[in-house]
Image 1 (cartoon, rainbow, N blue to C red):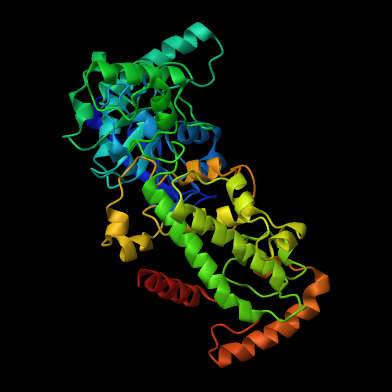
Image 2: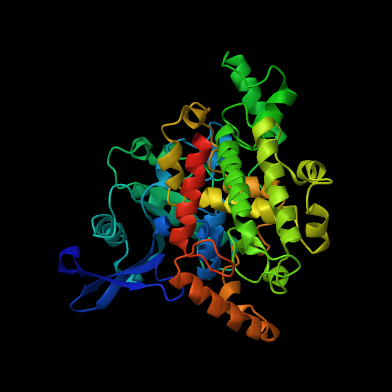
Length: 482
């Protein structure tokens, strides 16, 4: 007869082959002298701090299970979807909050105990060993999806699932909202530890997947509106129609333009549009009249390779700059939501815009540039934006909102299809030149080498390094404060 005291536990780890920087596979094996391996636990350590905006892509590349898990609970930055945390039926017990955005995720993919020794607490002990291991700290979250595999009979599948759910609940896991996923916090003071097993929320079908659309339904919003009105709480609008309009896209401040573009997000995009416009003005000396330019400039990383391959004329670049100018002025002078039609209307007759469009240019390329730049400078990136603006009332006095860092939502509303290919197209500089352009590349490389020797940071033909670009951006930001 096997006793738990006779069992030894051994951890092993292996970085994921496809994504070694982001994922680590953890294995725990339980062995006893007579029977060998009697139980095993598999988990995936997910290092979110490195993923930037590729969380969903990395999860999808690993497996369909992690794809389903990530799309249901998180956005592409690995942050929990706001509507899972808001008061209402989606929130479930309400024990989970923004702490799901902190630390690493330890996704428990399998706990297996040999049939002959089940019922002795070995599976629970293995979860305990994992929680106490070097792979988990108090800010991390263990997560799982109880779902039997290899079972075709529906009744048997349902019974097994209920057993799995009961097992994880017994070990402190509680449902996230009303989804099919459960979480465990190693922090003993976490609110989830106050929820009894019998008090945990039930799952409510597939209505919470939210992968394609994070907006709230009219029925949900009407329910929230009636509850708030009955309780005498401050409302965003005096009418149901107004409340639905403002809250549909997750706004919590009540002043998001269109219900989705928050004041702080607007400020970030406005800054980046203005910086792009000013930086492009400095680039104009790189062009010669009537001669296509093949080098790399400040905003050309967001132009597809097929446009850049034949070279850019100054008129095209002027038209491109006019798009950024229109975006900046619109964000600065109005409180309306940004959109392709309003920028198209504002650029009618602007310098170079007709040529820009005729040569394949699109307003979406500028939208892509400013949203990507803003994301990289935000807390989801390197947070460099805070170095300049966190002590300025022009930014800090703006109301905070759940949409302040919803870059995926903003890009969606601006028409940037997440299934499409967007910039920066940096690989163009290394791989995408046609053989017909090789002679041109050789001559430009020689010019670049001379320019580098002369330390000329703004000369034609130079491929700027990141340090040069960062210095220019900081200079421009400083000038805008004056």
